[in-house]
Image 1 (cartoon, rainbow, N blue to C red):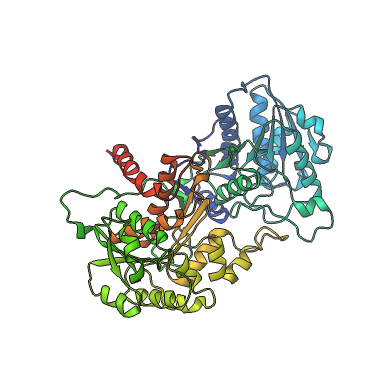
Image 2: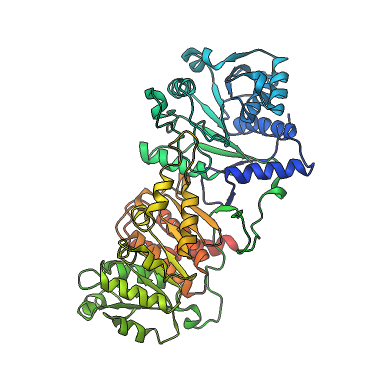
Length: 558
């Protein structure tokens, strides 16, 4: 029994490259076309790798004396299942295989592995699977459908998966839990189904799937599905184990070196890790680290702006100026020391301030208030072509006419909407995205594609906030920052946390980070500060945790 290297991920802070369903298929096709591997050899590596990952992560199971039910589907995921069954049988497990569909119509490689299994034992139709068959097994392995599923599941499978979820002790999902989109993480439902089970979809809900074992790379759907399940059942639930089996085809993955003007958005997706260049070099003057400007609201509404300004200063901007109407100066002065203050209420006053070329990054939106004055200040700030973060009120002020904002945006801008603000700015994209995973053919946009198209439409970087934050650049680069599993920080859901994130990004752009890198680094730091503080966090704590996070980074990188 041979398999590739097994990596246990657990959704932690380690940086990973992700592949979409199409990218994974293309990678496999390129590897086979080159003669590097065959479909049969990849299937063998994949199936044996699942067994290796199972034994590594579940020490309660020995190599002998255990039992498993393996559910095999009608495609190559089912072929993996037959390999798994054979490997477990060779180790002395008692294995029962249930097949779905006509075994005579399996793809070539899957059919060969079904034939090899038939030499060892018989298979049973999935329709024969009972609750006793499930509850009597140490492990149930879901190899019905993997990453390629684009249609809703039939009533029979839905019913059987419901039963598995209710009666199995340990469920291992091969590649993806059956019925979950590899790109969006959504359940593929048939909204036109006549029977209630098909209308609701399979109930492989948290924490029914104990272990997901995927191949070559994590898929975006793994992150989005875990996020969705945790929201449904509570943040105190334990995320399933995620293991990755290396198929040895890394050289055939899409290249991250594609130039921005090249067609085909084939850029790999990454989950964030420690960003480079966060600690300052020696012997640098403060203005070599930039001067950030944060525009705050009026009297009684300056807290959001102050949070953003402190965050920009803490993350390393050499200087920070907070602007506000004259009536709010005393309020802000009473709470700020290292941050400079300038009274600004009009476009002319902001334009005068920006004649100082040392002021090289801007943040508008937090606490500014919605309306015409905010729109005018945003337009003036964009006209300066400086790196700029637009958040909160700077976005919602354009909800009646998003095109007037898009017409002024430039490549040095970062928009940081949450899902509601995004929906108001990009209503057409949201309508299409909501169709993903809800119809019979799986059409519609995934969340990633939605963010990518928004970045192209706005011609700037989009940071769509959430437990799985999506950062997309107009050239197709995409980053997912996941606060899941070991990085789960439910206490980050607190007033003002988004203002701090805007400030981190603004400060990093003042220091010279490009918008995409500033957005991904700021998001990673945001979560790390919350993790380091722990429960009881309020937004004011986040900037004050940053020195400890940066010290830890320095220690780890020396």
